[in-house]
Amino acid sequence: MTSAEKTKSEPLIDLQRLVVSVRRRRRMWVATALLGLIAGGLVAMLLPSPPTAVAQILVIHPDDSPTDSGTLMRTDVAVLETTKTAGEALKKLNSTQAPEEFLKDYEGLGLTNNVLQLTVKGKTKDEALARAQAISDAFIAEYIGRNQAAAAAQQKALLDQRNQAQNELTPIEASIVTEEAKGRNANPAQLERLYSRRAELTSKISDYDGRAQEAGIGTPKVAAGTQIVDAPRILPRSLLKTLATDAGIGFALGLLAGLGLAAVTSVVKDRPVLRREISQHLGASVIAQLPKPPRFLRRSRAVTRRQRVAATLVRAVRQEGGSVSLLDLGARRVTAALALDMAGELAEKGPVSLVDDLPKTNLRELAGEGPIEVLDRGDAPMAARERRIGVGSIEPGTAWTDLEFLGQETILVVRTGHANTEWLHTVARQLADRRIPIIGVVVVDPDPRDHTDGTLWDGLHTALRGRAGAVPERKAPPERRDPRPVVKPVEMFPREKKTARRHPTPYKRADDNADAPTKRFSPVSPDNAEAL
Image 1 (cartoon, rainbow, N blue to C red):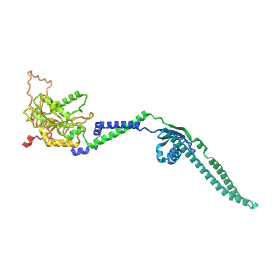
Image 2 (image 1 turned 60 degrees about the vertical axis):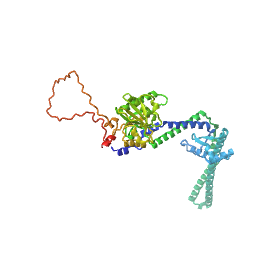
Image 3 (image 1 turned 30 degrees about the horizontal axis):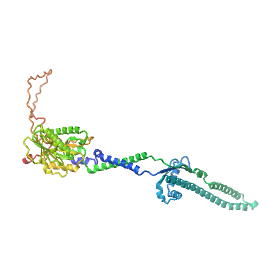
Image 4 (image 1 turned 60 degrees about the horizontal axis):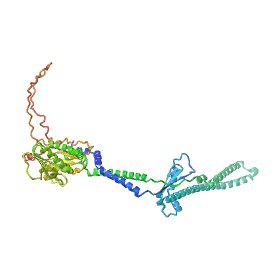
């Protein structure tokens, strides 16, 4: 698979990287959550909620039925929260407040099909109680008046229909009198039709009269039953409960804001935090990792881990004379300590010197008095069997042409999440241009749950493989002769000897090409370049 195909197959957003980046920014979202918690508590203490009065109203509906799903009560709540009801309540309170503003201070809630709960806020307790009473009275008066107006309108409609039937009955009575005056010449069929129509109209008139009288009475059950069943009272307020509620809301909002901000910044800044990403962008394998150096506790454990990593790095570099550099990228203290530990390991085998080119760090003070000599860049030429470790930085602003004077090879000490992808590419490209092979990468402060593979299998994935040309040939160990004679076992059933001749194959050791580099990523040394 080519690099272009790999780029196409990569997802737009790596969820694993996003989760690790958000977890590494836990200080930010924990801080925002704590700020939200504190802000919620301060709001509860400095800006307490105003006094709240509650009242319950029993509403009798003339058209109520057991199958009603709460439509009538929702209509009453909507009528309660109208400017008309608010205006009538303000008139009772003799207030000049606008009805639209007054609507923001109260709300209604249907508890059942016939019970309406009213919640009103006020500046003081007395004001909240007065407002609740005024709104309740205004709603009841409006509700009863609306029902009475509906009954009066129904009565008027019935009386109009009765008068219309009466007007129609008058000519029919006259026709009956005229037909009866004819005596024997009267038409019996005509009289029968007139009598039937007169009886029908008379029945209608009687019915309209009765219904009009009932409508005139109105709805006494509605007027008598609709009333305040629970007088306005002030809701008890607990400071601790309010404090806990507001603080919890502030904590949740702050946590969500911090997580969102951490996710956005992790995507925008594009800083690799996984071992796999760091190795891919630098073009070198991760050979060791160190946790974040502690400030107070567990320093001895951190020192032990660092010394183990230093021993690993010493085994990775060449065992004879030569120079190697440790280049820092976001972990200055760890780089200086690793250099001193490596120098201490190599001092047991021969002379060692350190080249101090690490800014804002004094290796002489850290090394103290001992066999390790700390030099400045270009102080003295390197002896024949002297080991020299150069300590420098590859932060932005690095003088790339000076890196080759620190060491022929280099080990990068990179802190996760410190540099973005573009700068890692710049470091790898500049080191390749200076023909400085990278032995490996030491990752500082990795994510504890990062189990990604930091090994490059299509390039210089180990130090020995990348520097196979510079490693001296290994001599075969001398053959050891056993003084005791070797007794060959006797076969009970000897096998038949094969007569086919075999072509002799040249002997080849198994480790001849074990450390050979790939053709694509073979390092080019200055000596080989001059020979070419």
